[in-house]
Amino acid sequence: MPDKTYQPTVAGLRAFVALAQRRHFGAAATDLGVSQPSLSQALSALEAGLGVTLVERTTRRVLLTPDGEELLPRAIAAVDAVDEFTAAAAGAGRPLHGTIRLGVIPTVAPYVLPAVLRGLGERLPDLRPRVVEEQTARLVEQLRGGTLDVALLALPLEIPGIVEVPLYTEDFVLALPAGHALAGKRRVDPSALADLPLLLLDEGHCLRDQALEVCALAGVRPDLGQTRAASLTTAVHCVVGGLGVTLIPQTAVASETASGDLAIATFASPRPGRRIGLVFRRSARHDESYRELGSIIGELVAETGAVTSV
Image (cartoon, rainbow, N blue to C red; front, side, top):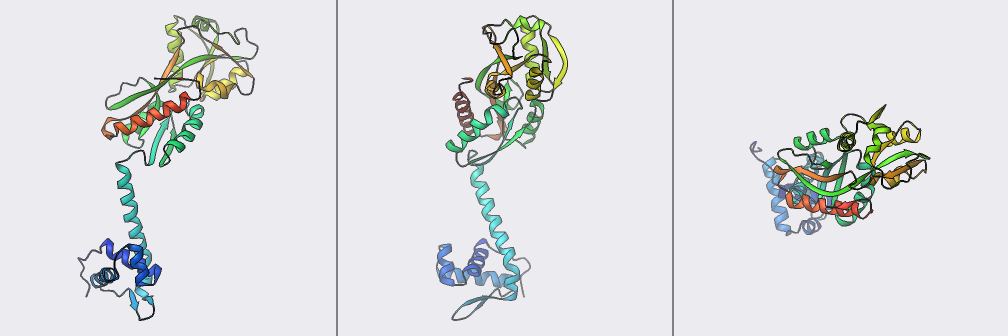
């Protein structure tokens, strides 16, 4: 009669699964790295504890009993679950191995992710990034809630409990319709924004706030166009269509000007810009690993030639 308090051991389940798959005691024992007597003992203990005969032993071959056939899929699932748990536990102490959930703001993601993901695949082959693109407030919410591990954001945030690791700085450039009087100019004074219809991104985009800050620092109240865009690419299309001008980060220039329909101008020194960094929860206790990740990302973006490493 089975003991209702009995709990199968992992060794017993592994013995049963290995024997069911190999149908040979010697081969199963070799697979598990144990002796045949140890394998037989583990299986016998499992059968005794369950009160069920799982394997029919003959002098020439190993057969599963009907009960063994029925219980085998569950035994395999149990062994797989233990293996997955062990692998996850091993990865928990090595955050740059396994899956990492990476948040990225929309004005960074399309312009740096190709180089970053390709480079991470080469430098950290055991890392599997899972990318989430959202506006800053939403990413911070997910980060603090534990559904993100790290995020690429514009700094500073200055949020308690969030560590900021500056990675690189990049200039803002003025995006203009082709043929505009300022197209190609290299030392445009930001005060020129006072006379230009400035297109902004929707509320919640940090680039919107940064563009308005550029205007404020220049002492101008910009002529804000009525058009507002949900993405930087949409804002650029509106510029190409003659609806106004906008500010874009240097990392976006190559992509957004590829068609030849967009002109740019650069600002006079000190040129306005932004600082991008990697942020993570202080409580995550992976400070060293995440700083290493940030350093690698910063190097990969700097290799594009569009930014300056911090």
